[in-house]
Amino acid sequence: MITCKADPALERHEIDGFKFPLGAYPIEPLVPKPGYTLQFEPADGGEDEGDWEEWPDRYIFDAVISADRVEPLCKMLLSLFPGRMFPILDVLGRDAYREIDPYISYDLIGSDRVTDCLRRFRDFLFEDGMVGFGAMSEEPFLYLFVDEHKIVTIRAEPTYKEKVERVLHSFDLEQCEDPAGADAAAHEHRSVLSIPKDQPDLLTPDEIVERLRDDWQLILNVDPDQNLDDEGRPLGVTAWRCILRCEFPAGPTRYVEVILRAGCLREAEETAFDAVDELLERSGTGEPRDVFVVASDRLKPEQLGPVRTQARKLRRSEGGAGWLIASRWLDE
Image (cartoon, rainbow, N blue to C red):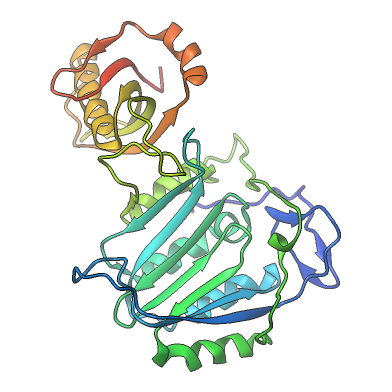
C-alpha cells in the first residue's frame, strides 16, 4: 500500500509524560500543560452572500494535547462533521516569497476520502513539523485545523459548543488560560519521514502533497492575479519554477520542469502549459491525456543564477504572458 513512515531513528521528546510531535519540539526548558482556551467571535461583516470570509458567530477552541492523543482526538472531532467537507492543507514550501503554501478544496469531499488519507499518511500529517491540515463545513459551520505544532483549533457555531466541549472533556482536557505545547517556548521544526530508495511505496513529502492535492481536489489558495509576498507587498515580475505532471493514455506518467518569468500565478501557469506544449512537439512525444500543475514556486534572483546558465535560451512563450527560460523532462 502506498503510504509513508517516520524515520525510526528519530527520538521523541517527552516531558512529564507529555509527548511532543517528532517534527516539533522545544529546545529550551518548558513545562507542558494540556488543556484548551475558549473564545467567542461574532459573525464577519461581509456583504456578498457565499463569501468564504463570512463566517457566522462561532466559538474558537485551541487545544493542546500529548502527541500520541492528537489523532484519536481529531477522529472524534471529525465525527461531528457532516458526510462531506472541504479539506485544508498548509505546507512549509519552497516559494522564496511565501513561507506557507495554503491549499483548500472548493469542492465537497466525502469523509471517507479524508479519513483514508489521514490513515495512510498519518506519520506525515500527525508528526511532521512542516505541515498542517484540517477541514471545514458550512452547514453546520465547523472548522478543524491541526497546525505544524499539532495544536488543534476548532471553530464551531454556537449550537455545537457543548458537543465540542464534551469531546475535549472526554480526553481529559479542561479550559485554562495558558495551555503549553511545543510552540510555548523556543522550538525546532523538522521533516520526519524515512525515504529508503528500495521502498518505492513509501512516499516523500512532495509526493504526499501531490497525492493529497489529487484526492482532496486542493488548489493553491492565493490570489492568482497578483504577485505579493507574505507582507502583501507587490513583487512585479519574478522568476518561477513550475513542475507539471503529464499523464499519457499509454506509457508512464512523466514530469516537466519549467523555469520562467511571470507577473502572477496565472501568468506563470499559462506559460508553463505553453512550455509543455512546445516540449512535447520538440520531443515528438504523444499527446498527453491530462497535464496538471504540481508546484509553482517563485525564485529569488540569486536562485535563478545557476538555472540561467543551464537555459537553452530566453524567449517569449507563444500564447503565454510570461517569459520562458528553460524546460526539460525530469526523467532525462
